[in-house]
Length: 129
Image (cartoon, rainbow, N blue to C red; front, top):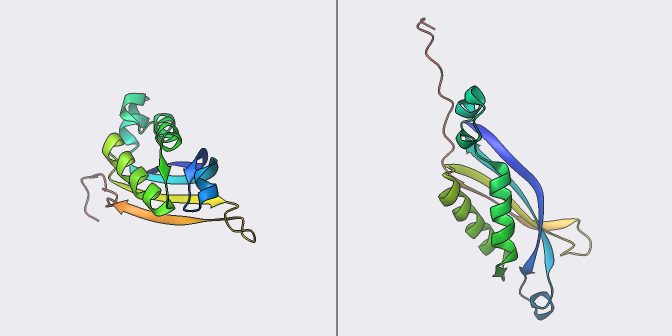
């Protein structure tokens, strides 16, 4: 299985449990690794056969900007479900972080994996190994 990724996708949203966090938008940062098979797209150079990272990024921006979550955990679960459902992704690893949430740390967050990562399928060569 190959991986198509989007790293450091920064999106403004309402996120947090404290009253002040519910009153102003904060930045969340996403790293998303998605399992796919790039061979059909590579062989044909046909974008319709590719996992379109631009379409995924634009969908996530619309979804997260239009949502409000109390917990990063809830955001992560919703994002993972959306990507798997709408883009037919069988496996993903998602890192959602909240830069500046803890004064002494660069960022804090969660990392989740969902789905099943398919093993590479060997091409048949017609010879014994």
